[in-house]
Length: 89
Image 1: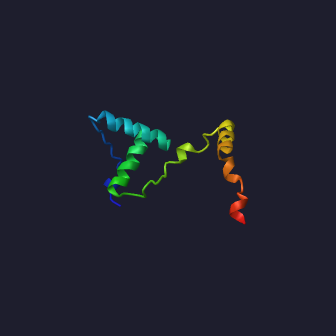
Image 2: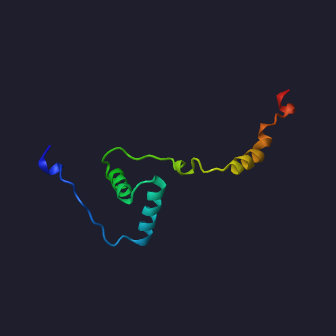
Image 3: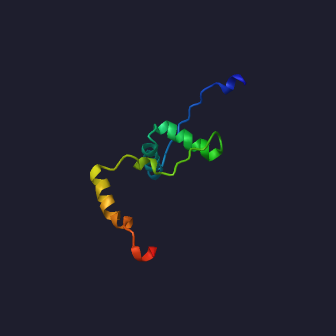
């Protein structure tokens, strides 16, 4: 490796449009990472450097249900657990 490959580079981005800034903040919260690391990950993926960060987007929902939420869901889908004897003859 060359010496200049070890130098940490800094990048300042000016005039970030409000919509982009809001989306970056949302993505930062979704990933649970810093804004800096989120931008590095997104740029790396966009230009094909390093492994892409893949997510189905469901991770943010994990562990968010309360006991009441679970009970309500189970009550709402209970009818799907019943066997229709007419269909099994």
